[in-house]
Image (cartoon, rainbow, N blue to C red; front, side, top):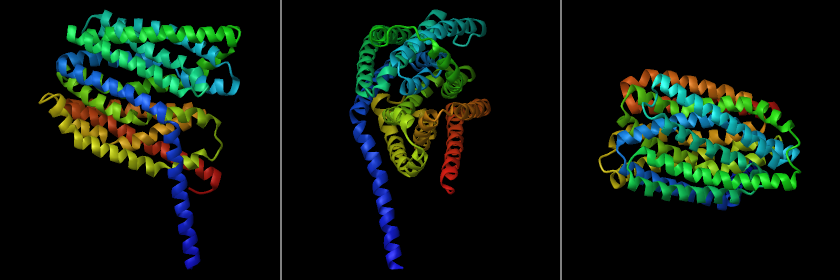
Length: 430
């Protein structure tokens, strides 16, 4: 019996070491890419701190509504070109050509969507502002989407450090330019102009590089079969992106219409802090996707094994951020956003599960399960919309935070249940 117990203990210890060792190797291999991503995030946070200090809550609310609409248009124009393009390039090559076709399709969609958004805004008075600035905000957000499509060849060649460096330089440039613009003219328009200039410059530079390589390395634009594949395979992802973006920005639109711009301005600040927190794992999940596309059938089992470690990391970060929030508010915005602490607690509490959702999302995407992700994304959006209508009139920003968090919890448990079924089908047990 003692021998058997020792064997079980030894196997358990070996399993724990292997799991933590795998996480350590992932962190180590992603260190440079993650470092540049985090430096870019830090630059964005500096910009965010300065902007939220200098602008009034009402002006922050105006900018928040513009960004909510712009996020929806850019989500549709993304269409799923990036994950589908990476998968096609992994199996068929022609990464530069795929990137060019995806970019052209996205530009056409962006033009149609921005025009539609401006017309709808004029008809229904969604933003109650000059349509010209809404148009520029949507164009700026679309350029970020197109930038990610132009990164497809770099993903395919595993040039994550190059991707990280471009994001870092553009992020720092946008931060410096926006701070200067805000100091000159303290309104939301200055933010739109500064971000548009930087995003347009990056787009022009990347486009030249990608088109030149397409002509030199892949012999031009003769193969058009990838366009049909990008559009057909990207359709479920497009609907999923739209529902996901509506899930992430519908609370802003509802708060903007059912409450005041001042309340939305305060909520947008704590939501930006929350977004930055759950994007901590973005460099790792980004680097995992091409690897997932090449992995064997045991991947789902290994993902399920690391879930407790991901939860532990998320819980530590979540509790730390909640503890630091009062100090952060008093340091940067004395007395300005204290009323948003309950909303922040609700949002941040879900971080452990959200981190795991990000990894599971990459797994399902790499396995071509876009339809499944579409279903749970639409389900989350519908639940979010229902809860917003019920909770926001009575609980304002805190109600919006609850309506955002609950569907994410439901989404995780649904995804976890599905991956357990995959494991059961392969091993005959959970």
